[in-house]
Image 1 (cartoon, rainbow, N blue to C red):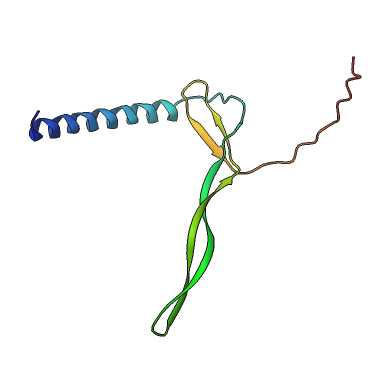
Image 2: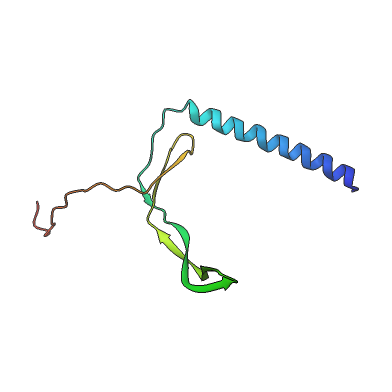
Length: 104
């Protein structure tokens, strides 16, 4: 397979992927969503592990010495009909009642 054939194949695949993405988007726009239960689905962000002082001439600044992954609490819910996934990082207070196992 020479380069021209590879480029044509790549272009065809890109067009097909775009068409499928548009179909999925259209089905999600017109769906009457029925979401399943919320699931804990943490995300992460990169935070500096420390700082070092650098300078060049009279300019001075701090730069990170390294980075680490830090979990960010996040929840998701998925539509049972179309597969659309929504995320949130917000929580609302829920009242809990203790269960002592004595209820009939």
